[in-house]
Structures are given as structure tokens and as C-alpha cells.
Image (cartoon, rainbow, N blue to C red):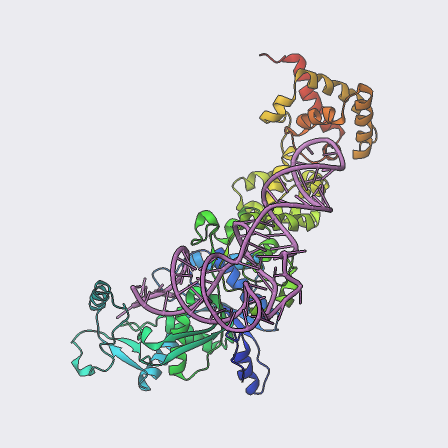
Length: 503
RNA sequence: GCGCCCUUCGUCUAGCGGUCUAGGACAUCGCCCUUUCACGGCGGUAACACGGGUUCGAGUCCCGUAGGGCGCGCCA
């Protein structure tokens, strides 16, 4: 028999399920602890779980790991639900709150105790801290030394409430067949007796996760590989309880651009921050799915495509670095791909999340909406984010006389202003007023003057938009309309006569 | 300190022992298009961390080294 591949990815439990004689329904879960926002790494984990379940007709549950009463907040729960919703990741059923299930967790601990797979530990936190300190000083392992493992409970110091610890195997090895990491082996002497129930009777994370995943029928645990060591300890709890272990898939973490831990400066922001930066959910999903996972050379995935293509064997084992430039490029792609009306709707949705959003929303009259829509085809060509689209539309939003930026101002020399006066007269005769008719007029004007088109177009752009870059100048003319265009040109042309530039 | 994981262009990755003079995408550089900025088109620079094995043959398998990451709580 040939030696088994070191990466048995997924085959293990499939075989187990098939042996049970029925088709296994895939159940995944996303289990954030509500101690902060939904960060980008969590969003990717949720995405992977969602894609895996959706691609197999399975379910993805959301479990809020709120057993840490001190640090869990409602605001964080809201932020996580809001983030997932915005990203378009829909969980099945109602969110499950772990804290509410503590009675069941306690029951499992009692079961372990009754079976002799757990014991009461009367060591105080101070005592344990001392033990670790001594271990550190002597260069020994900081693991719990099992001092109460075989001790007679009658020796328990009076008044000390015990914690319940798992009686983990002392010898042999604990093995995880991970769908991403392959076969990972721990010598049991490197794993200690973890706490199942705290001395106040509340369950620890390690116990709660195992019990919940089992009770929820979770078949595939897809999570960050910061949990890989936990997987070994959880395996021991599964064994103690006599339960089968779900398929595990520990995905590498996302790092910052320098390879270190992802910091806020690097993109470890809540997904709400990405929304406020003008990224589209579809773009973020596409970017995230390609971080650590690939499907040949394919870069662009519709939601349907990624659901169909996503699978565990194509997940890499090395951590990926977060790269804003690629996200931007992808976002630009999705913006260009969007229908004009959808884009405007997306902008209106993001307005409440922007600093000057209310101000902008107030300006969105039906007429302005029409103009914006008309300008959208050329606006989206030039934008990487929704913020860019908004910025590109500033010339529509600002009233006369428009403010010129420095470059535009420098461009409007006395000569240029004179030229504007002349071209204004030309444009005044144009009717009907369209991009085509204005272009014809301006081109023929430039030709007669023996000037390059740019020599006329740039001053026009400055006068019309207040900037030196903008959508095509004839589109600007058309969108602005004849009256507004001529007025803006006149604003600059006449100011030349009234206020000759000094110096 | 102990345990576990990782290492292909700057970045995301393809590659599952010969088809690799290592492919794609982003970024970058150049050219073209052009009224600006973009978009688009064409082209260029650029990588198998290092050292040993195994093999007729290694980016692909094994072992070291170096570097990076994660974990080691009565946190999750």
C-alpha cells in the first residue's frame, strides 16, 4: 500500500458520512466573539464558510461567542450582523448565542466528570500564576502540571471552589486531519489538562465550542489557523465525550503588507470602514475570496461562480498579505461593470456613512439625479471607489460661481480667458445642445483659430469644472446644459476684463 | 523557552517529478489611443529563501538552516 498523502483534505469525514449510509448535509458556522467590529479576516472566514455551504446545498449558521461577559457588547454584535449583511453573506436561521447555552455546556462537563474523563482542580489562580512563573524561570513548559489530576478531593482546601479540568491523555499523540493543513500531530505530553468549567460554574470557550458544534450538527469547521492548537485540545474533548470530530479546515491568517500582523493602518478595519471608503460588497468579496484561495488563473468571480468553484483543497497554507492596490483595481472593475442606476443607488446607500453625506444627500434633487445619471458612464471609467465617483461629480454639485483649484486657476491666463470669450460666442449659436453639436462647434472654432483642440478644451474644462481633469469636455457641456455651461464660461471670461491679473 | 504552521516575481497566485527558457493578475516602467484624467491595446523589468539529500531527472519528495506567523489563560 502506498503511503497516504500527507494532505488528506476532507476525504476523512466524507467517508465517515457515507458509511452512515446517507448523504451528509453540509453545515458550517461562522462564530465571532462580539468584542469588536467584524474585521477583514473575520469577513473572509465568514465568506469561506458561506461559499462552502452554499455550494453544497448546506447551511451556514451564525454563532455569537459571547461567553466572555466582560468584553461582549451589543454594539459589537450589531456591527457584526451589519457587516455580514452589507457584504451579502446571509446566515441561516437565527443567530445562536453561546451564553444562552451554558446549562447544556455544564451538562457536558458533568458527563465528562461522571465518566472519569474530567476532575476537579482546586488550584487557585494565584497558585497557577506562581507555577507558570516558576516554569518560565526554569525554562520549563508553562503547561498545567496536573497537580489535582490524581489527588484525593478530600484533600481539597476548605472554601475553594474547584474548576473542572479535562483528564487529557498523558501519552500517545493527538492527530488532526485538517482539510487545509494536512495531518497535524501533537505529542500528548505537550498538551495539558484544560479547564472545562470555571470555578464559578461557567463553561470555557474550549468546552462551549465543542458542545455547540456538535449540537448544531456542524460538519465542517472553517476558521483561522490561530485556532489550530485549539483543534488538538478540542479533539481531546470530542474523544472524551465520545463524539466524532467534524472536518476541520484551518485557513491561514491575513497579514499586513509587511508580513506582520494586520494592523489598523494596514487594513485591519471593520468592514464598515471599507463601506465608508467606497468599496462595493461584490468587489470586496471577490478580493477576499482570492486571498488564500485560487481557481486556476481566474481573477474575477461572480457570486454564482465563486459558489460553484469554491472548495477546500484549493486553499493555500501560507498567509496572504493584504494589498489595497489590488482591492482598488478590483473595485474599479466592479464600478465600471455596474449599471448607472445601480451605481447611483449604491452611492445613495453609502451617503449616511460619509462625513459630508447629509450635505450631499440634500443636494440630490430629481434634476441633479438625472444629470448625475447622464454623467455616470464617463464618471465610472475614472473611478476606483464610490468616493471617486462622488468626487468626479463635484462639478455638478457646486453652484456658480464655481471655485477653481490651483491648477485650473493657473490655466486661465488672460489669453485663455480671451479665448473663452470667443468660444462662448460660438457656442451660443449651437442648437440643439448635445455632446456632438458642441464638439463640432468647438472643433471648427479651434481649426479656424489654428489652435490645437486642447488649447481650447483645457480652458473650457477649467471654467466648466474648476479643475484640469474631468470627463470628456463635450460630455460635461451636454450634462451641464446650455444655459449653465455658457454662464460658467462667462463667469471666467468676463472676470478677465473686470479683474486683470496682477503680478 | 516549548509546540504547531508557513516560505514561487514588490503583492495575490498557477504549478500536484520531465510539457518550467516557471504562467496569470495587481503594482511598476515604456509605447499606442487621446481635449485632460481615466479606460482600453501592445510590450518590458521582475520569483522557485538557503544548504544537503532521494531520483536518470526537483519549483514539485525528504532532512536541516535561516526568516516569518500562530498558540502556550479559570480570554475567545
